[in-house]
Structure formats: C-alpha cells, structure tokens
Length: 145
Image 1 (spheres, helix red, strand yellow):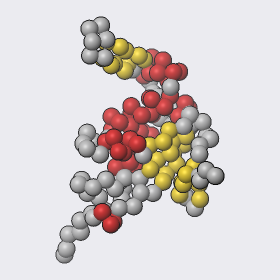
Image 2 (image 1 turned 180 degrees about the vertical axis):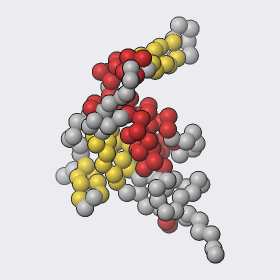
Image 3 (image 1 turned 90 degrees about the horizontal axis):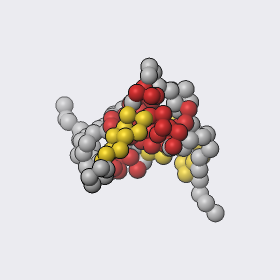
Image 4 (image 1 turned 60 degrees about the vertical axis):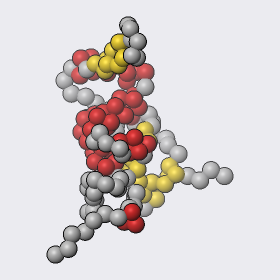
C-alpha cells in the first residue's frame, strides 16, 4: 500500500458559510478552526495549508454559558510602563463582536507559520449581509462591476 502525500497541485480551497446566531462561542470557534485548517478533508498535511475560506455571519448574536460574559477578561500590554489593559467579554462584544470571534478562533488554531494565513481566510460580519454569494453550497465573492 502506497502512502499518499499532499502536493501543491492537490490544494483546493472551498468556501463555507457559518451562521453564529444562537451558537455557543467556543463550539462555533472549534468548527471554524477545523474548517480553516482543513482537518476534515481526506488529504491533510502539516507542510501545506489545505484549509478553506469561512464566512461567519451574525457575529453579534453568539451565546456563552455561565458567567463568562462578565467574568471572562481579555488582557493586553503595550510594552510600555503602565500599558497593561484588560477588557471584559461583555465590553469587547459591545465594542466590536468580530474581535471576540477572531480571538476565540485564533486561540484554537495551531501556532505555526500558517496561522496568519488562515486568519486572513476568515471573514466575519456582524449581520446577515455580506458581499459573498451562495451558489450550490459554495460561497463566492461577488464581482464588482
């Protein structure tokens, strides 16, 4: 039996539409990260990026369980003295719900050379309107004329 290896000619990037309306944040982030990495495909390999594009809509309508909305804190530091910042999930969702989804998905992606490339293939929108069309289960960006 021969071992098949993923080649550049075997790469194919499909488009997926994920509706976050009423979905739990962590579970949705796992699904999105799996699609971005291409782990659900028949041929996978760590040396090539075989992931798909993901369009996530209704980013402001996700749910969290328990008291995470008030208790979950995101930390950052500017590198300068006194540059420590913290913001709760509730405040970040009110400011920009797309950042919450992006941070959750980024935390579930492997920390390797493909992480930024995979995050660029993630398109997040706060409502159901987006500049992509859905045809035959595939999502393609509309041509601007």
